[in-house]
Image (tube, rainbow, N blue to C red; front, side):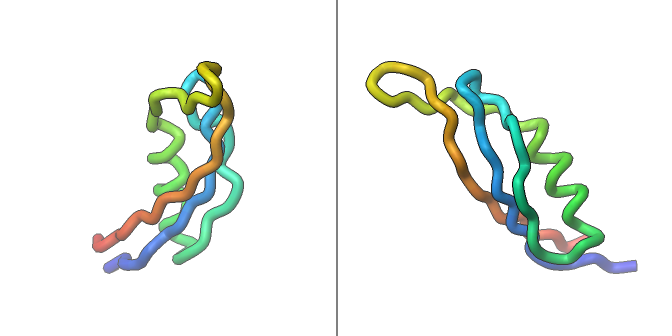
Length: 66
């Protein structure tokens, strides 16, 4: 079975640079779980405001061609 499509994921990064929450995903349902699992493994350099780490929201698109 071929699986192709784009999954867009909205997420929050906490003050430590870890993905704290995956809020929403859109795209082919059968690919959303893989996209969410992948992003939960990501680590970021903490976002800074006035010299202090803060939570930040972001989104990413995964292009699948399996």
